[in-house]
Length: 118
Image 1 (tube, helix red, strand yellow):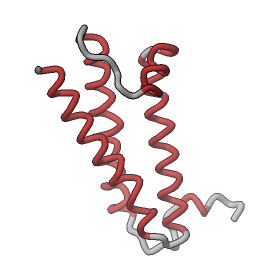
Image 2 (cartoon, rainbow, N blue to C red; image 1 turned 120 degrees about the vertical axis):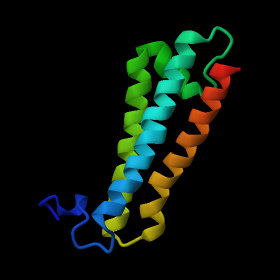
Image 3 (cartoon, rainbow, N blue to C red; image 1 turned 180 degrees about the horizontal axis):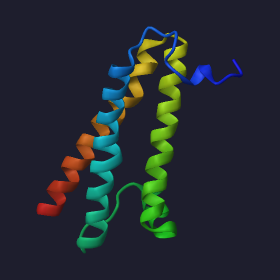
Image 4 (tube, rainbow, N blue to C red; image 1 turned 60 degrees about the vertical axis):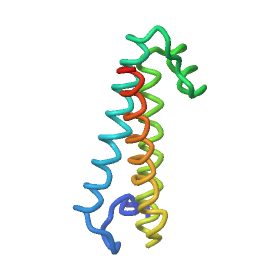
């Protein structure tokens, strides 16, 4: 398909509203919650260091833009996987990326808030 229709949900068994809700949740937890709390930890905590080596290197090299860029790359890659899976009618791979990001984002956001308060 060269007309770009492979990157839509048209003709798949999945609903756009459900897709939007799943990706809103993933973006809110992983893309916003984790990023905001990580930036707060980086700037306001003298005792906490970033545990993820890739994130640490990105922040040391590019600052906050490195963190945001890395998170954006992960979000877009997962989004592409999910949409491709929808076109292949693969429900497991369609649901896995946004749900995994939401779980990881909720956990890291909660953990970061705990570190900020502790």
